[in-house]
Amino acid sequence: MTDGSRQRSTALGAFLAGPSRIAVLTRTGCRRSIGALRGVATSAGLRLGAVGRFVHRFKHWIGVAVLVVAAIVLFIWSYPTTAVVVWTAVLTLVGFAIREFLDYDHTGPSTGPGGSSPGPGGSSTGPEGRAAAL
Image (cartoon, rainbow, N blue to C red; front, side, top):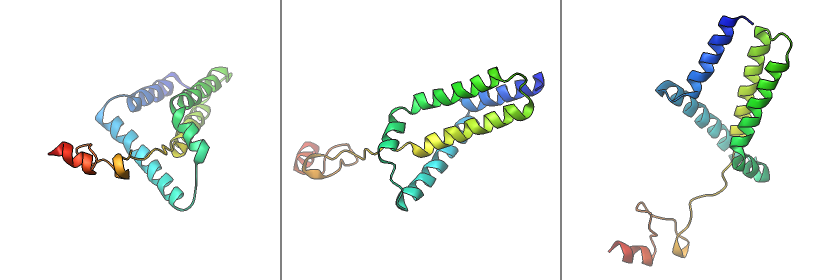
């Protein structure tokens, strides 16, 4: 791999990981698309159960592990060609997509007294909530 292509791929990765509007929109769009796909799969009968809870709990560390494995592959490879770097990047992105797909936060909105969900102001719509609102 030439130094120029290595620099371009590093710059692209840094750009997409950064706080720019385009990077945030790209990451948000990917996250929402994968979330929508997960929603369709769960409505079709997929149950993530313990796996989804595990991934949700350790999402950060799973991402770190994916990046560490990709870095080890690139550092250990005797002569990483452009194809090796591209396929490593593609597989890293696939790993992040799988992590996002399996991330399932099973906790719904908390219920207030009387089993009703909190209203727009965050208070219960039950008798206690109405009394507090008056």
